[in-house]
Image (cartoon, rainbow, N blue to C red; front, side, top):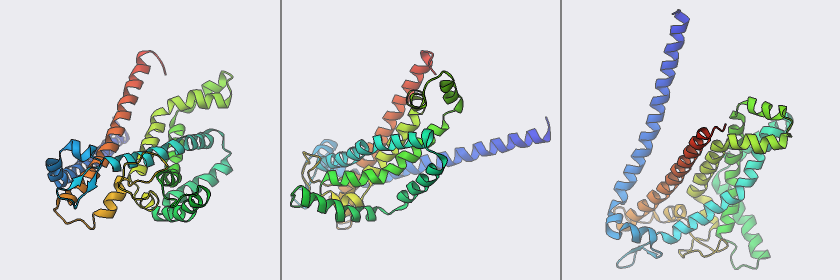
Length: 302
């Protein structure tokens, strides 16, 4: 074995060790966060019980006894986050397909930096623009006493998560080996057919990963929803009603709660619920994709 070959093997082993250490460190950091939030919120789980804490609809931490139900806030979070993904997913995926398959080089070179700029804009700026433009529009055009609503928050979140969906989805499409595209075009199909029927299915794991990333971004956003959702501790029955997502609840009340009180512990429980919810969706999607991949290989697909 030559010296150059040995050197390459050592470099590959070193790179593998670095990747292992980085991935292990990220996993340990996540476990540490979960452990810390579980420890801080355990008195609230013990006092209220998981069913009352998660499913309860009344939030009155200063009552006697305190009412600490997170059901209304969980529902508000779902309205805003899932609503944003519902609006952003078709726009983001179509934009990614256009950039990866059809856009001229000069046009893609303009769009990509614009998307990067959008990701760097602070969330408070998005919230301010939403409050100055969207809220006033809903008040004037829809004759609402106050223009804040979960729908208004979802619209702003849509703009905020679009760059993540587009950039991640385009990367997933470009990661598909070019041989598949060339083989499809060699069979005489159109570029549109090749993009929709060949490239999109092959990149489905990356595309769903982009939606998961966007959902986590939307569910954890604080300032925009704090300024636009209405911040009413009532169960939202409509996308166009007001509510208070979990992130807004934590931001509003953590600074005024007494450290060590049941109210303080319940806010940590709310953060743990939000974290667990995003993690569960992530794991569920990965399980579905893994089973789908095994099914494709089993039946002799690509």
